[in-house]
Length: 382
Image 1 (cartoon, rainbow, N blue to C red):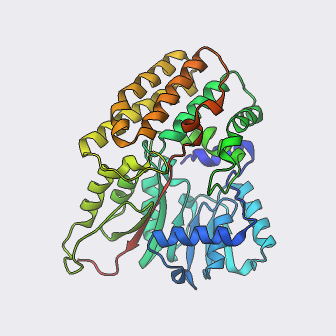
Image 2: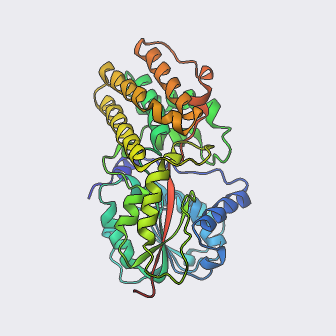
């Protein structure tokens, strides 16, 4: 099975997931908060057997060592990532006996052992065989154990998809990869480097989100699809961001929690559009309409990358006009973002330079692009 991430990283010899961990305690605090949102207290990692799939250069793995994880098995097929991971662990004096690195894809790994915690972060949402991998990981976790995966959907990707679209129009006549990286990094650098919580470089963000073909993958693993992929032997544990509520009585063991969560997801997923939004609720009808129309906009943007043509820019603009009424229901900021994208595209079609400072909402908006989902494997079936 092909993996667009591995092909792209291998082609350019990169692992664009480095993080600024000069303040290491701040890095650990971010990871603690993530696990807490997922319903996993830090003490749950102590002495546990952990499988991490796709650790990249190992920055998040450091937190697992810090939290007292026992035996760590790390599956990373990108050779550049493996080299950087070993170097990082050496710099932080992690004893080699605490971990095993398997330089292969998870589909290729032959293992009969099981783990207490399984983590697959940052890639499942944009590969063709995500359901196959979830099935395999489900077999590798102990009863009572936890699986953590990451998800995206077309709504949560919308802001970055539009920023990506703008960049690809700007670099349509540039064939050299490093020149493309430099152009896009320079365009966004001033506004993104000061974003609160930004822990990786703007250049790595450009390489991984703006130029990485996996971002445009046809198959996307949303929270809704991920929950459906897990069998009935798994129950929902937590999510980051936390958008689900559960008022059921604990003795009501016949309560259909999965149905409730999927319904809430359809009414709340638009809140992933961008950070800083106050929660609003849409009808499932409006939510599905927004998803469909943003999905169509995304397809036109992807077509432009394959064949740069103003007709696709026109079609994206038409789609943006169509979603404005629903964007207005959500927030003035969302509608303002759409208006600014439409205006930027007008300038780009005329071949004019963009002064990003004029477009404050566009430049400062960040999507809640990636969500985390934790599922627990039930010890008792009913």
